[in-house]
Length: 379
Image (cartoon, rainbow, N blue to C red):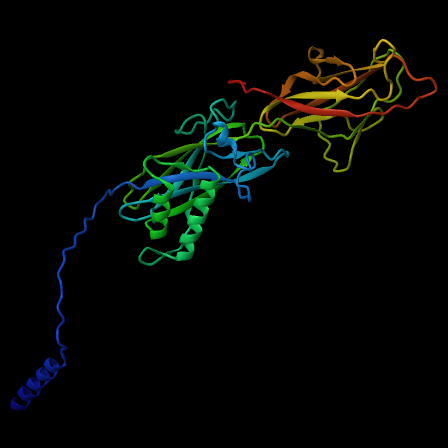
């Protein structure tokens, strides 16, 4: 027992001798509160842009705001049948407990208020004009402990500055560019992004975008709301590059009837007398569209009184109610119209009053365009 006691005492002495001299210290208080529903996050800024160098195809030089238009994005439709274009949705989010590392950020997008069915008849609880919900992802890699790399911070700030300089950003009340950039540089706010496609046929107008953030206590931010403009552009295309009226007699009207079947042949197609395909026209814009037509005189000319030696008429569909008569060089608008993503037959007629003696073959050009027909509710 005596040996054991001596060894224990020796050990204690050795440990005591190993303790270094203590430095002077200060004692400060600390406090934390764990809550089941914390402070709601804040969406400080938001904007939309296309993945293009210009950021917005509808206003690539960013001058619309100078004419009194709001600071929002202007996007042109692709003007190609069946095409879709991507739109990127951005938001800077912060939260008192979590900084920018919240649980969810998303956008609810709504069709314009004058949209025709089916774009105004959604059964979603969010209302008849609801389009879709877009989930966002944080544009940073969160290092354990909530630290954000300087590279990510720099990329966030560059994106915000570019959008600000293009006049695309909507600010929540009380926030400025300087304040937002400061939070991003400190890592107490984060840039979030979502991407969704919009169809060529989606109705033109002002799309409302509501962005929300939800933190890990299920506290939800107030919505930050803005709009982007899907610029109204009417457009039609036809499935032919040339029409052959064939043989005609003087003062006898000859119609070349169209059809409703689109010829997908990628090479230029001839329609008319003796041809397997006939003329079809379809809407490729984001508005309802009237068809416009202008035909040259094909070389028939005028008499001394200025009367044309040839005349034309056209109609879309089968009803003569919509037939329009016109002279060469005059642009006429067909009275009926094409709704979004629809097509119809185009009937073209010619009536030759007088020809040039000895000349049997005549040729010219037809310009087919469109104008906008405003949307009407219920149609």
